[in-house]
Every structure is written in C-alpha cells, then in structure tokens.
Image 1 (spheres, rainbow, N blue to C red):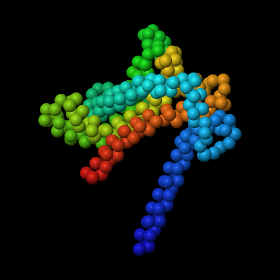
Image 2 (image 1 turned 45 degrees about the horizontal axis):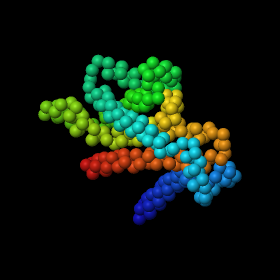
Image 3 (image 1 turned 120 degrees about the vertical axis):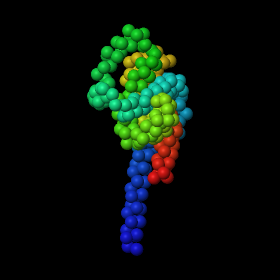
Image 4 (image 1 turned 120 degrees about the horizontal axis):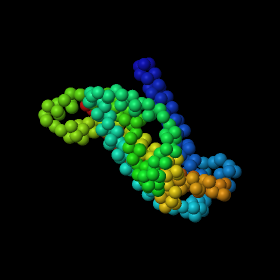
Length: 279
C-alpha cells in the first residue's frame, strides 16, 4: 500500500514538473502573440501578457513594407521541395550506406562526418561566385539543390536504419525477387517513417528560417523569402515603431511550421504506437 502511494506521488510530481516545463516553453510564444497586438511604444515601456489594441495598426505597418503572403509563398517554393527531396534522398543514401557493403563505404561515411563539422559560411563566397557563373542568381535552385545533400540527415537516418530495420526483411524481399527500389519504397520507407518525419520537421524549419543564403542569392524584392523580407522591416528607420509589426510578422511566419509539425508528428506517433502494440 505504502509502495503504491509513493509511486503515485512520484508520478504526480513528474507530471507537475512536465506541465511546468511545458508552460515555460509556451511563455515566449504567448508573449509573441501578445506583443503582436501592442504598439512599439507599449512594448518598450512595459512587460505584460495582457493583449493590446494595435493589431490593425501593426498589420498596416507590416503591409507598408512588404506583402507577407508573397514572402510566405516564396519561402514555401524553397522549403517544400528542399525538405521533400532532402528527406527522400537522405533516406536513400542512408539505406545504401547501411545495407550495401562496397569498397569505400567507410570512406564516404567518414566524409559525411567531416562535412557535418564544416560551417557552411566558409564556402559562401565560392558558392556565390559559382552561382554567378552559372547564372543562378535570383533563382531558387541554389537554395533547393544544396539542401538536398544534408550530411546531418544522412548520418541520423543511417544510424536509425541500422537500429530499426532488420536485415532479414531485405534479404527475404531479395529472395522473393523484389527489385531494390521496390524494397526501398515498400519496406524501408514505412519502417523509417518516424526518423524521416523527424528530420523532415527539422529540415523544413531550417529551410523556412534560412536567412543568410537567400539574402546573398536573391536581389529582387519579388523573389525575397520571408526571413529576408522581415529583415527589411527590422532594419528600417523607425525600428521602435515597428516592433509590434515585427512580432506580428514572426507570429504569422510560425503558422506553416506548426502545420508541418502537426502533419509529420502523426507519422511519428502512429509508428511508435504500432511498434508498442507489436511489442
């Protein structure tokens, strides 16, 4: 009896701690929504979680500088194909490195680890010069194609493949005469879906929030992605007045990320639940 009471108390304390941590994580998001309804002067003057009455004013200020929906469209044109292609080809590469024993396998994997440690900013000047010679400036191609080769995603999915995919399934499919790509699409992808969904969420967030490369590659206003457009608001003359509009722009820009998280998280949860039932 005493053991049961002690277990319930510990369980209750854990749940309380988790609720407190969840609320603490939600506070910045709530503050962002509140500040989106306040003027820049009110934000500078006081800290509060009580909404203001300047939502319409901030909306008008925001659209005086740029059309946020055009920026969202441009960001989607980059983030969606980069995320989809990156997740697919990273899974394909990870599967090949995990299940195909060929000369140079370890060398390639070692190179992937090395590239993970090299900051992308080091190659920025050379990359821009290459894009200039290929006439790809003001094009979304330089923002999409490099994102497909994601060393971190390949590394994570290779380790996940080795832990989650039984070799016997692939061997059985080969014995039955199934083509390799058929096995990959019908066997490997469903099993790897939790890992792929996780990395897709991270990849979309990274591509959606990417600022440095679009700022350098894109020079036409109508081509700007959302982070670049928002930087024009933050770098404007009257920064204090635009604080509320900046919070409003950030709040709107978070919506696609939340939708992507909700969409992909169901694959993570369903796969984990299926595994728990089978176990």
